[in-house]
Image (tube, rainbow, N blue to C red; front, side, top):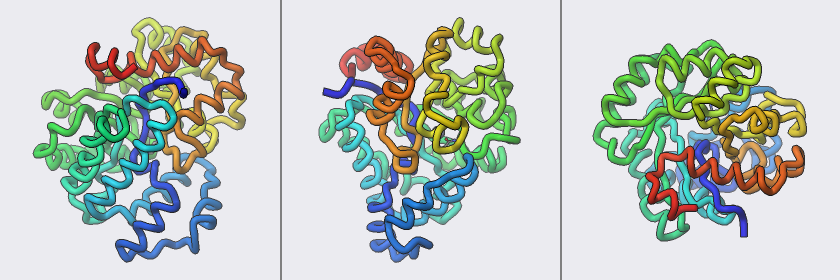
Length: 319
Ligand code: HPA
Ligand code: ZN
């Protein structure tokens, strides 16, 4: 029996497996610049975050209809449930789809079809987190929030992702304030490729409840002390860090040191179709590479429920 856990850092577009990408391409009459799934997989050799994002946004061209989004989410939930996931808080990037002419309603209602069935089909509870692309303008983020208004009952929180360096959290102060006024919770990617200062900004300027990634906080001892004291959850993604070359070797991942420093850590898969593993695989990989004890793994699983947006009674049922 895999350890029951929650997944809190998962981009639904990052669960698009090559086989599904080719099936959707055929269904939708989209031509991909790869001969077959093998050639596509060989392209998953990333230098950094940007080289991944270029391929990732390109492959999204196959996602066009509500059914496509429902199928994508159902495939993720099937795999996640098999690896012990009982609860998933799922990011999606509306601007990556609306820019291609796919309406935001198609994305949200398609995902919602799969999520509504997830408890019954897979025994997994879910939440949706709508991310703004930080390399797009603040106005575009505001327009995205506006266009999501008819679907807000489907959305729990807002997030911030895409190219981090040079796109500080403060650029999105206004849209985060507007989101909070609408009753949405707040998270943001910070301290993945960007500096520790962006982690501070995400907390102080955007008022986020969790930091996605956050590992570069380790360059700032005062910040580490604060994150530990305030018990700010960090949604770490070690296989992503390895594949995007934030670290050179999994054995060098700071996860164990971060837990030793009293940080509130969780382990997640980020974009599992691209980074070589779903969250159960990620737990396995860090156990092997870092020699984490069973107690430490149980602590990570416990943290994942505690850091989730579940209410206390839901949390007890999910564990
Ligand atoms: N970082 C930023 N944006 C992303 C990521 C990531 O790891 N994955 C998908 N979008
Ligand atoms: Zn991410």
